[in-house]
Structures are given as structure tokens and as C-alpha cells.
Length: 263
Image (cartoon, rainbow, N blue to C red; front, side, top):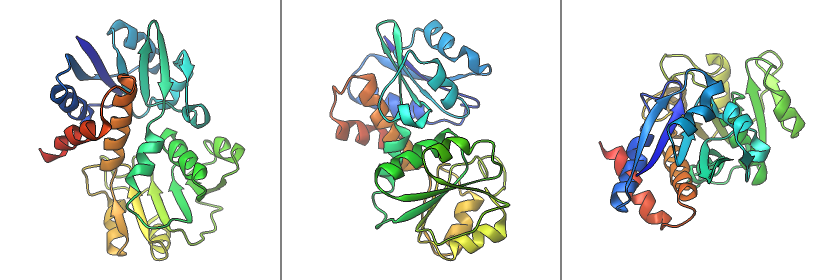
């Protein structure tokens, strides 16, 4: 039997098993997708091999650790420096990033976007920043501190901390932080966020299935909003495609996975 898993800390909230198990079932594949919390990130690849996995997904906070541990990195993940998909090829583990393209597919229903502001500077922010850059969208990174901004500066992104930020008008504002996941926090001070929303058109929060304070404030400002549900869906479809080496019809995979949001 084929075995896949989601790695992270925590992972109990993840619906990735529902997404992938739906597709495995509907395609009549002998496989199973499970959750595995990784408390010690240095053991990520060791755990992958110990569980005899065929593939895995990686969620916060281990995407950058996974990048460092893979035997080979392919695709846009090489630029991002963060991995969310692990694929076994013989005795090697290959790292990919499907978050980037998953995000871009999720915002396809938005209108034209000329520029964007990303709140946060972790692995997910890197993926989103790189795919926006690839599509020619001018992107500004805003983070609480300077400690994680060097990567973005190296790729030519405009970077700011709360203290030195000089706001412009942004079409799209994206929260990539964990603010609001298990609390009522905002990703930056409320007066600043309110001012940003007053000039924006779209808001996106990578957190899914939860009315975060970020999106609540954005809706009060009459922005067109999305949570991370479709990003999760599309990155999962793309990961499944990598697990099975582009064998199955992605429209069928997507249709199967969408059912996971119905219950």
C-alpha cells in the first residue's frame, strides 16, 4: 500500500488527509494519507524514511528545514528556499514547492493586480512573493522585524518593518502570518491595517476555514476577500500530481478533493 503524510507542528487541524484520501479513493488507488507531527525538525527526513513514505507534504513551521534536508530540489522551490512537497524517487527524496502556483491559481478570480503587500516573511511568504514576481506583480514585504527580510532583499523586493514602513496603495494585501489562527491577533497594528485596507481592492489570508480578524477587518472595508481554502486545494492537487508522476487527470483529482470541504 502507498503511504503519504502531512508533516508539521501542529497538524491535528490539517484537512490534507481528507483531500488526498478522497482522491485516492475515487481513483481506486491502494493508498492512505495520514498526519504526523514533527516535534524535532532535524528528524524530518529520518521520519520520512522510517515511515516508508512514498510522499509527504510539509506545513508550518518546517518548510525551510525540509528544503535543507532534501536530496534534491526542483522547480521554483530552488528560488523560494522552502519546500512543501516531498516525493520519493528510489532511495532519494525530492523537494518541490506547490504553494506558489497553488496561491496564484487561488487568486485567478481576482481582477488585474498591479502590486501587492505581503504581511510576514516566512516560507509561505517566500513562495507567494516569488510567484508574484514571476508574473510581474510588484510586491512589498512587511514584517515585524528585520531578521527574516534578507532573503527578500536579495531578490530585489521592497522590504519594511513596522517602524520604517511608508505605505503606498496596494491592489492586494496578503496575510501569511499565523495571526488569527488560534487567537484574535492581527498581523500588524490595527490602525495601519485599516489605513491599508481603505485603499486596497483585494485581501487574502492563507489561514483557511476560519473567520480571522484580518479578513473580518477587510470585509468591513468592503474588500473582495479569500481565505486559504483554494490555495490549500490547488497546492494539494499539484502535490498529488507530483506523487503520481503526472499520471492522473487533474480535473478529476480536483473534483475529488473539493468534496473534503463539504463536511
